[in-house]
Image (cartoon, rainbow, N blue to C red; front, side, top):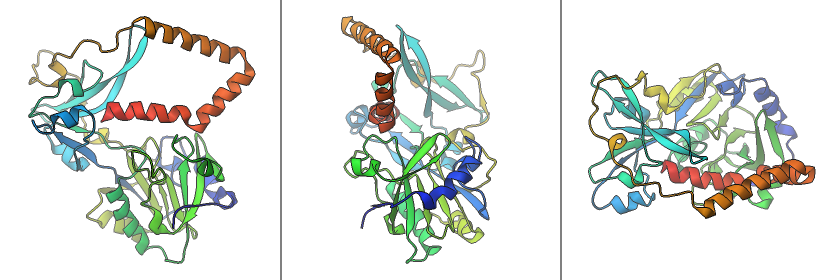
Length: 346
């Protein structure tokens, strides 16, 4: 059995009201108040080890590495390539990766990689850690969490599932499903037994995408995987939260409603600026990067000019502006941005 489109969103109004009373960027903004306890399930980071054999695969961006827990990252001396900074070159906005490296005193220093990505300068023997995936649980992690939730959920109790409306790979049928809204977010609603939780909403897509919201009919617990978060939050009874904390297959920590959403940066502290006069060991940040692979030729200049003309026409025409906004809401642009983002992070 797969996800069935919900008949109505009326029974999910409680969630909309609860999240509307929460604070954006905090746990209360993605999980309702009223539960006995809360927990944060951390999504794994990824360690990559470059060898002669897997160098071509890594350079193609088709290998993520092996999952590692945040506590391992905190104790590791391996550089962490995590996050990015925006910069403008030749009037084009781009991004560069940032790199955290542990100093001898235990602090992490943050460097800025001079190139737009890590892949062009990889060499056999390199090892690094990348950040967790946001907005979805990996299949194994989802399966483990589902097993714990199942022990606290009656088999006969159906569950609700919500998927963010902005994913570009949703089908027309999925987009037609009723939706529940909260400040800054809107999710299409579906019904299914809990054993469907590990299933992907984008089965024909390149990545596994689990539900962003889930709760049983009796509202004994509620799960949220915010699209921009590196953790999944669960609110429920004390017994359920204790079971999640005790599950060896999960890296989980207690959470509070007034906390900001957690991220891997929380374990890379204290972070210090690069000390003056300190020579760090040679690394990615000091390697010579290849010349700009995207020179601003006449085709790029023409593309920029056409882009500005399109923006002007959309701004002058209310009907075009409305159509443009509807395209954004449908996720046509979001999916393209996601592909680019994935290529940079991988």
